[in-house]
Image (tube, rainbow, N blue to C red):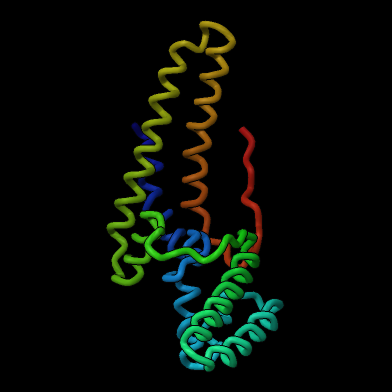
Length: 205
């Protein structure tokens, strides 16, 4: 159908939008293999905090600098002390970073737990080729549209039987319309940077 073509055609633009967002948006910055901790390890190895400052707002820099300085002192007291000190710094940095984005901190997680789209986005950035991610997102978008469309069509057949069926149809209809709207709006609007904790707009139907 034409509506499917429109939404699936927007998938390419949506992928560009997704790649332009800060990595935190995909929730893998709290992993031990995520970009925040990777930069933290590099900073500790060099004794230079500069690589991690981009992950935090300026107003929180003092806290992270203090944690960094303490970590450098403690990590020189042996392997076990270094591991504890490093984890302390990782946790402090990730906690502050997530708080600045309005996200909760629930502890550091092991790597390799990212969603498929996150892993595909990272691979795209590493390889410089986004085709696989476009295909992945486009396929998921098409599947989502078709499922909601089929449910709406089926419920529409019985919408006039009684009020209960009518409400079931309306619920399916609203979900179908808003699903496409959400995807399309994300795809066509340019990414918004530095909107810490901003809530997405809610559109009424």
